[in-house]
Every structure is written in C-alpha cells, then in structure tokens.
Image 1 (cartoon, rainbow, N blue to C red):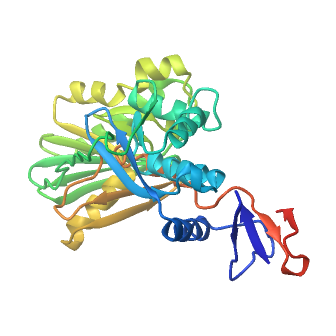
Image 2 (cartoon, rainbow, N blue to C red):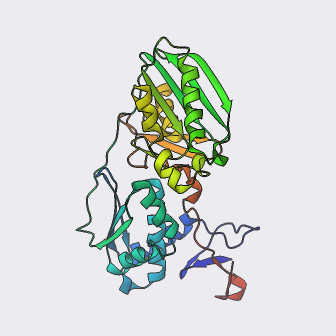
Image 3 (tube, helix red, strand yellow):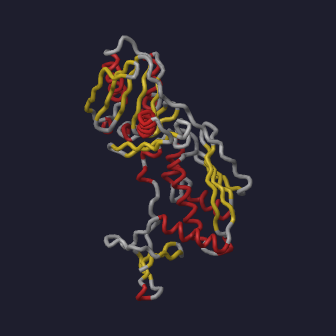
Length: 344
C-alpha cells in the first residue's frame, strides 16, 4: 500500500496498523527532494528576523511552479516555515524564491489564515505584529546569528531557582558548592492573581538566601518564553487575565531583580539544562532536554555559548509538540486497486 499527499505518492516500508493514514514528514520530504533533483529546481531562502536584529536563514531548492507539483511545493515549504518558527523564532519572515510560494505563505500566516495561531503567538513573543515579506532568493537577508555567553559563574554567594507547574525549587550556593536546597509544592497554572507568582518566587529566593552571608546574584529557570528577563509566554501564568499578565507578569522578574538589588537572569529550563550539561561534561556542543510537565530543549554551541537568540531563549522548544513531524492526513492507495485511493 502507498500513501499520497498533495500529489506525491510515497511507499512506506511499514503502514501503521492503527493509523493507516500516518505519513512521517521525512518520507514525503525525501520523495519531494528526489523530484527536485530529477527535474532541477530553483533556490529558496527563508530568513527569520528577531527583535535583537539577529537573522537566521534556511536555504533549500524547490520545484518551479511551472514544473508541476505546486501543491506539494506549497505544503513542503509551509511545513519548513512552521518548523523554523518553533525552532528558531522570529517576528519577520523573508520568503526569497518564487512569488507564488511567498504569497501562499503570507496568506497562511496571517490573522485569517490557517496558521493564525502561529501568527499571533510570534507577535506576542516579540511584541510586534508578525510579518511575511515576499522577495527573491538573492534579496533575502544573509544570516546574522547572535549568541550569548550565559552563566558558568561559580564564585560568590548565589541563589538558583526553577519554576515548574507542580513545584518550585531553590538552592543556595557558596563558591559553586550547594549549602541549601528546597522544593515547595505550588499550583501556578490555576492562580489568577499575579501576586501569587511574585510571592512564591520571592519566598523561595529569600528562604535560600537566608543560608548565605550575602546575596551576590540570582539565576532562574522556568517553563515558557523569556526574552531579556521579560515573560512573553508561559503555561505557568495561563490563569492570569491578559491585562494583568501585561501589567504584572511580563515585568515580574525585572521587578524582583530591582528589589533584590543584585544581577539576575531568568531563562527557559531547557536552556539551563544544556548549560548544566556543558559545565558538568566539560564538552561542547550540548543539546539539553528537560522533562517535566512540559518538554523543553536548549543548545550550547561549540564555543560554549547559549543559542538563546536562535531559539527564542530556547523557549519555543517548550512546545516541541507543535513541531510538524507528520504531514496532513494521507490518502491510502492499495496496490491491488491500482491508483484508487481513499482518505486515511
């Protein structure tokens, strides 16, 4: 039995018995690339621009619209765009290639398009409307990645905390050696009062700091999207009304930093996992995966620097379940019935 999506027929070695229409994205992509190689293609450059001016690019080749298989090309590119948005992030997407592709992506990623959620999510993260610019591959921007030398400080008296959906943890450290650690049960996702979050975080920090002669710095990790210590998105705060979120949750850690009067950094828990792995292993690069109420991932490059800018503070990966690993429902084609197909 073969499977067909957007006019592309694929012959998986195994058909999923409980979901005959299941088609791994890799099989569709492999077949599409074979078509491009056989008939020749044109370059496509996708460039994602972020708030700090950094740009991440992805280059590939696609079939020209006149070569046929336009539906497959549009699907192929849209899935790549979806993946890149959740892997790397950005508020502006440059689609450098055939105009038909660019206009399709612009229509899909719009307030009324099929990817309305992604459009609104990226706008929320970067605090500006998401844009799609249609251009040529030659005119699309070149890559300009930004990394940050996050952490690795062990000197002095420090407090670290981790905010999860079911508990919050805090540790006090003296010159790299833990002297106190505590775990407190809490329920942030059902808390509508922003002060519940403020009081909880401050309580954990103060309880840990009480075991130190002084407090030199604070570092925190939490599920969600954090940019420059500002909360942009996070399931921990989903019970807070939008107006209260913008007023009190978004600047929450800036307020805490100012009140404590010491340096403070808060990033996604996946990013902290990668950093901790890099420090403990003494090797780079490192991909860190944190498993809790949600799944998070972070990356430290060969230079030991966090790729937080590339992955929206590594926090888009807290929603790894949103990455497209399968194509839309396939049509199953039985070899016994020739080209007859049925919807999976």
